[in-house]
Length: 280
Ligand code: GUN
Image (tube, rainbow, N blue to C red; front, side, top):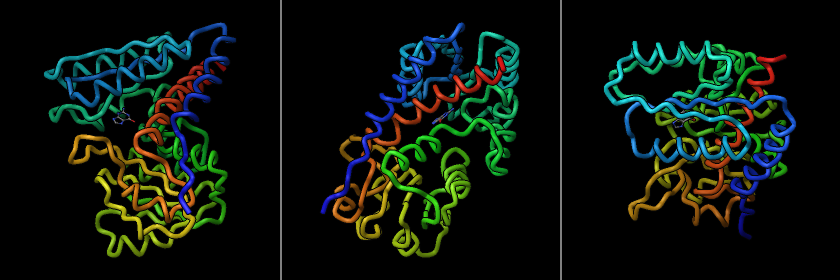
């Protein structure tokens, strides 16, 4: 038997179309501002995709491209200005930032009400407390893909591989808030294969090509692969050895075309949510 493929690209397109319909009915245009410092080439592609998707959904979207040698104080001043700009509902500072800028200082400076990445401690804290707040986009996309797969986290054994503040931790928390029994595994986990084999829901968010092998996947498990890595041949590959996993998994997300497109759809949903909350 071969796994069902969870088409994130199609799901994201449907959600973006539904969003565009909602936005068209509003008396205002939600505004997103993406700030990019320097010219990390991978970030360039992401930022352009975000910008295009935002415009297609009827948002106003602006990208501020700042030079690599921007100081932390200058970037903080930009964030402060955007916090006070009534036409901006969502602020996203593209990561990674150049090494001379403290990422935490910048993320902490964003108004939590405009923090559409959900990275501010107030929003991360709300998530931990299972209270309303802006939820990080990729983790939100993971939960929507599970829903699309018809997989309820309630009572399920979920294993999240990776503990980053952007993906691993918030995914673990969302699964816990949805009543899964959650294990967060990471680079120091003693027997990663054994942990993975116990998972009914396996979320891979490590950032290492093909580290999760096919025989680590329990028969019929739902596998959500957050990894986006360049393989030896230059092609994009996930954290899961996809071809090996297909005969084991019940359902699996492809890379590309799985979680990635969902991140942008969720960013737009967060921006609309922030825009509506600011006007409520
Ligand atoms: N860089 C890679 N992923 C992300 C993300 O989700 N948000 C931001 N701000 N930067 C990123």
